[in-house]
Amino acid sequence: MATIVPYPENQSPVILTTSQMLTTGMDAPTCRNIVLFKPINSIVDFKQIIGRGTRVSEEHGKYFFTILDYVGATRLFYDPEFDGEPVRRVKTVIDLQGNETEIEDSEEGTLSPEQTEFGVSEIALSLRELPRKYYVDNVTVYIAGEQAFELDPNGSILRTVEFTDYVTEKVRRLNLTAAHLRQAWPRTEQRREILEQLRQYGIDPVHLASVTHHEEADSLDLLLHVAYSAPLVSRRERAEKVRQKKTNFFNTFTPAARQILDTLLEKYADYGIGEFDQLPRLLQVSPFDNYGSPYEIYQLFGGAEKLLQVVDELQKFLYE
Image 1: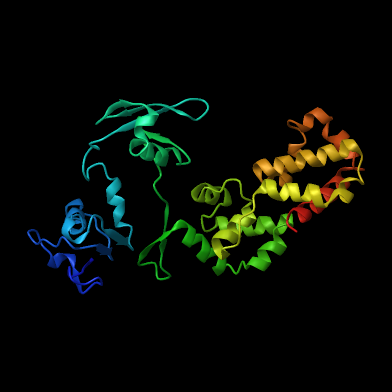
Image 2: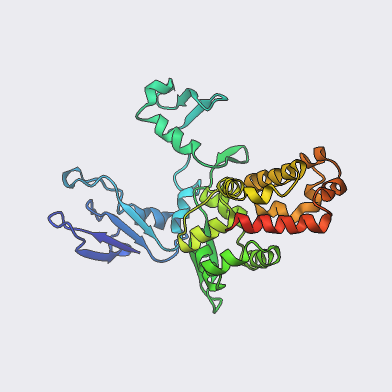
């Protein structure tokens, strides 16, 4: 572990030493950076190392420090034995419209939302922005972040990387270039092949959307965004563009058939392109069952094979 300590008179780091050199009793209040290079399995050692940065130095304007963690050692912060139970608890009650109606603070008591403009409300807001809430043994827990663990080619070193960085690396290693992905994705069989390749590395676009909080994005756009920094486009935006730009295509069908195609686009906007891969099953469930049996729906397009061709064309329009 490395600790970077600047002299108070100098704005740049001038001393670099391992944390073991700064043993108990050594005070370095100007320490601003703790760099973790090797795994730590001892909570005591972790406290000693992190403690080098927790000293406050008002004289030198040092009120915080930065941890640069290359090995995932900061996971120990989430160990309940690290520092025991939190000294402060905040509970927010929210009505059906999403408005805060009551906030209970273990330090301040019960407060109104107006009383928490610069305090508890910020904490409540940060918690409310988290995508899901989990319960373990009746205790509420949150996913603070996700990492991927991978053995090196020799199988001897366990490497820790951010999940999005892991996805980027695998997409590029599989030679899934942006051009190739855009060309192959509208074709059902090629898309399935790409998804199978990704799943072999534990990558699922649905899970990736949850991790990145982009559940509304198309899987293709999300992969391009993570791997190649491409702009994100929502599925609904893609569906609306097809409706606007392909009116001539839709006008070649009867009103009843157009209604089927419009409902297919709605399904895509809500759930993704995978809905098109399950067309026979999809036509048996709501709202398609309101339009008649699958056979009757096929006949609106001149038969099952014709409908499949139309759906293939619709997919190509979505990814133009």
